[in-house]
Amino acid sequence: MWHRRRVPRHGALRQRADSADGMSALPIGAGPGPGPGARTGAASTTTPILHVDMDAFYASVATRERPDLQDVPVIVGGGHRGVVLSANYLARQYGVRSAMTATRARRLCPHAVVLPPDYDTFTTVSTSVMATFRQVTPLVEALSLDEAFLDVRGSTRRLGPPLQIAEQLRATIHDEQGITCSVGVAASVSVAKLASRRAKPDGVVVVPPEEMTSFLHPLDVGELYGVGEKTQAMLHRLGLITVGDVAHTPLRTLQRAVGEALGRQLHDLSWGTDRREVVARTASAFGLGGGEPDKSMGAQETFGRDTDDRAVVLREMLRLTAKVAGRMRTAGVAGRTVTITVRFADFTTITRSRTLSEATDGTQEVYRAVTGLYDALGLQRARVRLVGVRVEGLVPRDRVHQQLVLGEREHGWSEADRAVDRATRRFGAAAVRPASLIDQEGAGRVRSVRASIAAPRRPDR
DNA sequence: TCTGGGGTCCTAGGACCC
DNA sequence: TCTGGGGTCCTAGGACCC
Image (cartoon, rainbow, N blue to C red; front, side, top):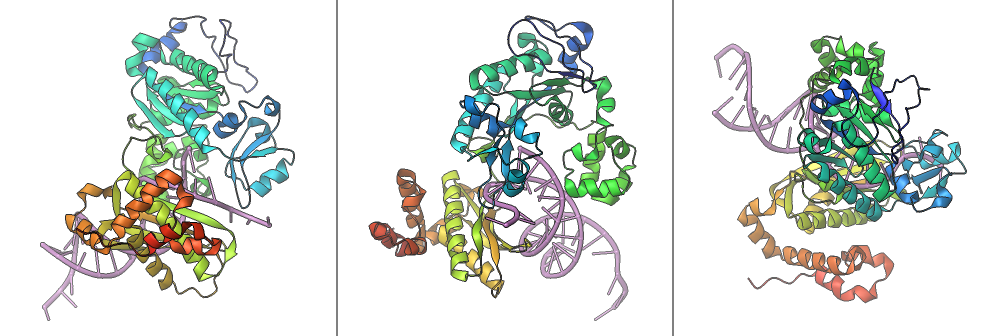
């Protein structure tokens, strides 16, 4: 059996985990030094991977300085046409879950307190937590703002076995950030991730290698990474209910059912044989910097109410284009493939893309492609719910052919874009917008900016 | 007033090239 | 002048993850 430990993070006295859920628990040694028993000792070499996952991260951060909300169901997110981003455990008792529609959540738990997300604070807390991880090992792979893999192979001599490292991390994060987290400890990243889920909330689960299959095989296939609602339903229809069922299905059969790549992946995961290593990286997509470059950048927005007005749609597309292209310029990348997304009132969603001959980071150039794609749809009074703009095939701008840069300059837009970027940096995104975004709001006070965007000067050189 | 926004990866068909 | 087989690129859609 694998072991779940839920223990106080403070003081020398540690208690056994509750056994009400049928899980066994080992006592944990008090004080510094390796834990008791050969099992824990052995873990130092055989289970070097930690998956640390904050408990109800957004909700915990949002309420950590609100004692009045400690015993109240709390939902972060919601709003008009919104979904739940995070719910505390009290709200979850009512069935509230992440990604659930706000309306449904409110129906399930009408007395919940709904808070708007504060991404600046989430990012600040996340940065601190990741820094704490890096004090343990440089091999920290951030997966998102609130979770990371740690390879502690090289840290056990200094800090003790993985379990002890896990408990130390939990105590530190609780002390410094006022939030709790759960840790999965295993030989591989995929098993560690499954283990942390079993540890929630506020616990640790260690899965020794010899107990891996007994841990994995009873789980529902839906627990496996890469198996969502659709694939789970399909596998269930085929009679594959548990991970063990998948494990004992011939690879070829599996691949016929779910495709070559996913079939291979599920087969590996079901035996815990994935050999993926932890790669040090921060979550660049979450504004933490570093990491591998993004492969695409995009933005999308759901309208407050559906619209069939081409002008309204295109104005939104321009706003999204400006946002995306601005982010690309900040990141120093350019991209070749422009994709638009249109979701209709009935939620059917289509995409259209066009690949340009050269990569670009110019707002106008991307927008030309966007309008071309949208108009090619030939929509007549179709009610549009959401539009999106994405640029793919990103490469560092300095690797883009020199001709592009010259050609762009001839149009003068490059200079205008950079002027916009500078102004945005100084005055915020609301200060500088393409003219058509200003019209509706009567913006005499931004006349000069508007003029400079609408009629860029030809550069001297 | 059901169903957000940021991404990644895979599949499949057709074009095109060798 | 009867046909194979890769490889790559492009496009559209879909599933999934956080």
